[in-house]
Image 1 (spheres, rainbow, N blue to C red):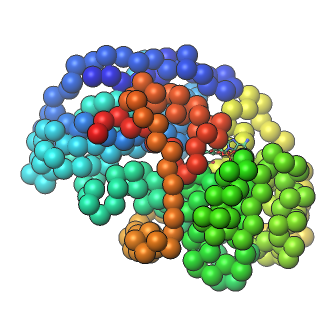
Image 2: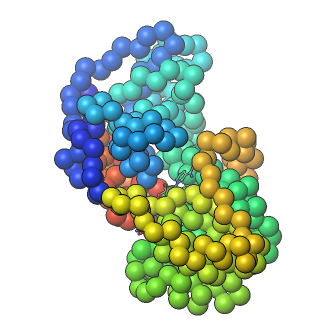
Length: 333
Ligand code: NDP
């Protein structure tokens, strides 16, 4: 069986050389464990941070060891009563063909309730991030005008639609291509969207939000955050979710030059990590699950086929914007 290991730590942009594919024996489960044949795995922006040797809210990946991350797969051997061969589980040991999670860290999922990919995207961690970030962290209220950056990605596509479905006065998104902009306006019902590569974000945001914005859902940081500070209305709120524009920087970026606007406009800027918002899980699945079922909330995935060997390529592609919606790697049928 194959697994993907961290070969070396990147300086700046990672490359395929930072990864190594290794052949290992299919492991045997010990008491309390299940053997899972992974079907789909997730590649996520936060994994870039784990490639660095720095202390953060999750420990760094170890050199010479397999990487980790969200995956779904089929139980092939079990040592516990509540999981049987043929069951599908969500767990945290992706980047390998066969995984050995503790049963208590494997959540049973039903492929008849939702396609397996949804458990890694719209109804999984990215979806909960969108839900918690918009509703709890940014304290979204009906009638707010909302701007979402990275809007065509896994988190962004859900955040913008929750805002629309909860009664936003206007939903604006930014993304990195004309096709993604069309996806936002034509398929997801965003009121306006722009390609941040077409010109200064602040000018495009101002044009898209003539009455300003009340909420900013930040997936990008940098010029996007600075533009949002300029366009936010008095008492506006920003959920600081991610800063993907700077994950490969080798020097700390300059802060938003206009941060003092937070004072004069009485802004609330609040960072968050989704794992602190697990208490919303049930509300999230109920509300977003029913919108998905009714076709009111749409989503897409970009699935890289060809097995775990292509996981590094999928990860690097996601960092460069090759995905629309959630980026996944298919490991088995
Ligand atoms: P996405 O599916 O959005 O994939 C990443 C996207 O980032 C790319 O598709 C690309 O789209 C965009 N991007 C890359 N570089 C830049 C850049 N320089 N400027 C603007 N956009 C860029 O990933 P996720 O939805 O999984 O994650 C989105 C954000 O949310 C990330 O910042 C991530 O770290 C954060 N996050 C935070 C969590 C938390 O708990 N706080 C949990 C989960 C995610 P494009 O073509 O538009 O450039």
